[in-house]
Image 1 (cartoon, chains in turn yellow, brown):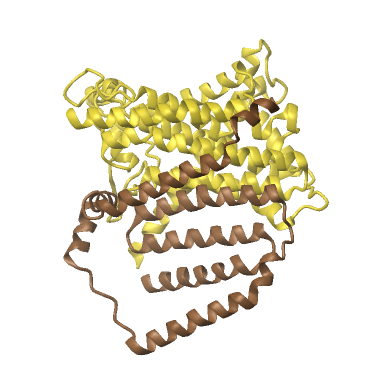
Image 2 (image 1 turned 180 degrees about the horizontal axis):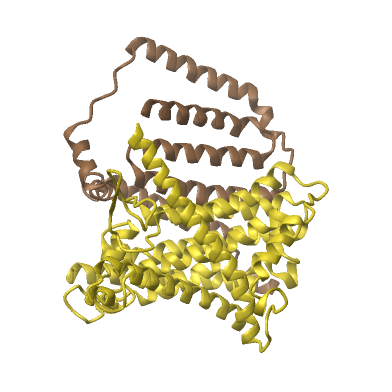
Length: 363
Length: 173
């Protein structure tokens, strides 16, 4: 029984650490987005709170915390309360299977733990897909329960959009799963060790350099569909401010609004983590091994691995900001046509091609 | 421990299923159905069928139920009593099935759960995702292909039903 309680304590500590890091990243992102957008539009961004505006997220958080909590007349109270929770929980829960660093094991008080992944389950990527699809309920219910036409229209758009693009996300990763032969993110990342030419975006076999199994098309489909699934510009139709005020969370205020907001940013971090793990080698450096390992600091090699993972994730997050600053919003029919008539055939063709090359040139 | 989990999941599945058809608001029905799907997935996890559990949530909760909600929201039938007028019929069918189950149980008696065979043990070692793929494309290849064909036919049928007459569209536009 003591072993069970010890395992529980270790797991809870890991969960607390990951949650803390994710929330901190979300805080940084809210500031970084405004700063990056500001620079791209030749502005300064927030400058008032703290030196160079770096305390802005804390001020925003305090403001949302003390705002009046308004429930609109005629709203369905139970669903109105449930919706932000249903949006936030799936966004947070997916991080349980993300490997942030190398798959080493540490013995603590006689039990073996993996410090950089909370739970290495054998269906890791399916688990993430399952819970991101649940995130749509928060948006749909939030839109329906607000008793407002803007919210309802935002919720409806979101439902159609999430279903359409979820399919493309699922099909885009199949090539990677074929090559890695596993659904566990830890195993998939380990299969890409030994230099950037082994990452699945390039797709060289373990003994060569030629990109025979390249997943670059799947990568493009995945990134575009991921932007669509997180409701970000240019696919932000569910919350298009020029048409629908703020879409499905028009009627929300205070902490309930903050929950939707955090969920959106946490989802961005999550899809960035998944993209980095599946296509860009996760915590593997773009050269074989690690520099710290070569100079004799093998015990500290994980620092380098975690740094590379963080770098790749932030690269994706920068891409989100970049897209927002660059592209105008798609029209609704363009969005649907693009998803079903462009992305879907590319993803399907990628599966066929990858299956054929993987059969004739097995890894 | 495992039994406790089983009874928890079984109880919630039964209770949520009753709620799905008992509550009047279709959105609450859908939510009860969501709870039920999650607990069925939990049941799969206790059976070490993690792949099935994930697919259960992705397909049913993530796609089909979202589609239901979509339709329900479009129709906006807040208090639709139509389906609750069918209860005499439903009671008749339900009673028949219940009596049938009781008679069958009484005739056969309770059987002990079957012990895992060699095949099931082998599944545990290979990983259940590989095992399902293996079985699906060898032993059950024919039923699998038939199911795919039926789905394809249903898909084409849906497209033909939904597609407008091209000439009518032309005259409109």
